[in-house]
Image (tube, rainbow, N blue to C red; front, side, top):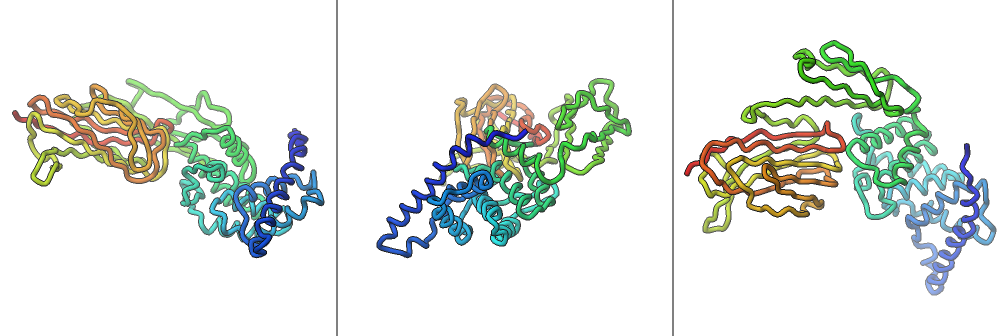
Length: 412
């Protein structure tokens, strides 16, 4: 069933007149300086106009009184496309020129995009230009930009390999991010279902076995193939620690295993086997003649000492909806008891102080190394375990890490 394009066709005369008005404004400005007429007037809006207009050229040709402006900006796009900083806009120009018959320039733009791409088996094809993370403008929207990359590689170069690599990035990006607009979701779904391999064409299930015993899929989600199996109590056997995952058809899949149990906190060691890495260290803050200083805790501390917990978080990809929890020792109390919004290193988060831990709720965590610090005051003498610090991406719980516990000896 084809969509009704009648409303779009009715809007074309007004859109075409905008280009004519823009050319008239350029001519007026160039009345005393003809060089201005041939200067660069290409921007993201013009690129998007050409892309949109060429979609409907077969249904409605550009009228004669608007044709001059259309040809002028087409020539601008062919000459000045390298000045466009947005990948989305470059793809817009490439697709428009290809539809107008200039496949040479279109392939040149695609070649430039491919040369700047980064490809990996896990993450697919992406670009380290910032547009894959965030942007204030519509032409920097990461999901829509990736969808446009897929359309350009598919329509201009017919490069199924590049299309599938870009689709992998979209799927992996959804693993730890929220497609937060209906437009982003629609563009992503369209990009995943068109071109490349038919992602929904296979109904082969991921085969999982624990200790040689196959896990029977139940309650499989249509389309995604998601299913889960739970084991508890005496159903858990030591040999189930041997896990085998088999995928019989091409494409992307991921699985995760969660084991919950109770144990002695003194025996907890750090877990950093995911893209999240968390290190925890403890310092004593004291005043010196040079000002406040921090010394690593290497022996007993005293009642009344201020202890600073430093959490160093490393993550190799941007994530959304991240929860960091720092458990305190039972013989300490927080110095800062006021919860609130904090800002550091280019991102914000909510810090919430509770009886047993400090919580950091991060809506959007950029890739990199981040340091969080909180202070407690030693209240009682004795020997304590400080607990552990743990972090988890709530959107993808398989991405988690926790630190080891720290033994704390407090004298009078």
